[in-house]
Length: 474
Length: 95
Image 1 (spheres, each protein chain N blue to C red):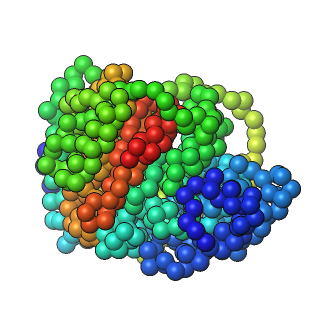
Image 2: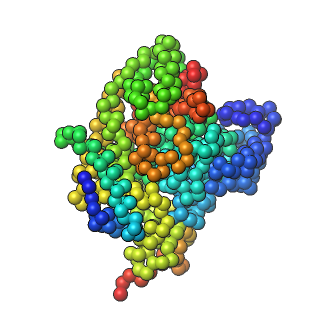
Image 3: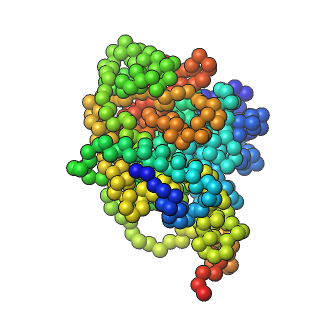
């Protein structure tokens, strides 16, 4: 069977009778087995996916199929899926079976998506390499000695290696875009609050967004359209109308594009990535668009701000894992307090503990104002400066990552060097704006490069249309 | 800002974590390095800036307070490591 790059291609072959949902699902299941060494999936729902595929084939015959009929999809192990295992790639939720489906997951099921399995990621979505998984790292198919990025590493590898057509991930600081860049595919982080977070395991609630990893802009647009919108189970979700993103992908106008000088000049950015970015900007200029450098003076403050705020929120969100209500419980406990401490210390991984510690510290009496409140203030400055830039240009175009996929183990000893992998992606999460990583070819070693596009809040329609246009010029 | 082992122990207690004593030195070093990095924010004057607290622009989203069963009793208890027919069970903590 050929490799499909969009649902449209699948639907075309389904309508010609060349394939069925069942044969397509069998193909992906077979690929998952052949490429088990990539460690992309934590659990594969073989029997169930095949049964669902047959059901969708029947629905297609009867003309009753939903909008995602023919889409085989994988979900990151942070999304609740009723009666399926869920453990955020960690030990503390061992044996946990979700008792409900999150809103986004339910909405794709209702449109006849076939969920083929749950995917490996960094524990509680904390990481940039998928190395912080209790199930071992997922491997980048472009070079299996390298990381796929993270935290949605398994989800990106699954799409890269043809183990499903699309994946749902989550993006708190770049966790969908950075692995998409490392794996040569699309990664969309929508505007904060565009998709309900109900049923998404909370890491940092003022940053977390469900994101989409796909092989085409069209599939990202369709999935967003289906998942976005009001939800009685999330009071923060936006009530703004959800446009028909998949039907507004034409792009014909001339626009203003801004780029950060640092991204094409800084020695901290890999030379081939700088050159690729420059080439794309030159192409856009030749096409008649206005391209200009923009000043973002707060670049060096975004990562410290991000880590203060996200660790604070994480320390609070992860207090629920106490060995009482679900998951792992230490057998060493003698009283209630030691039950909490031993359970958490035995079952959380090193990076999760580090972040709980940092977050607890920045929220503790005596340090709260100096760290937490300070970071909330700087977040306002970053958001306002970003909005000011985007009032002058339509899109910001910068690399998704400063380097291509790095070697497994290369950054595990030094947390700050690992945190720097997110330097270009975090700005969108601090500001709440939408951003996408678009594949931009490979470097001389064959490693994928991603280009990131950002725009104003709730402007996903123009973001997706521009991404499709950029892909066609690339 | 630099902190000491005593603070690490206090923070670990607040976060309901515990570390072996032999690892404390490593944690402390790591912690102080990250705090130095976070201290960079002090270069910015934010005396006239209000903290940004809410990221969603939705305000007071209200609905009728209807009684509904969204999670059944047995579903809520389903994943408990130790339970009886009605409750989560934990070690005794009142004398």
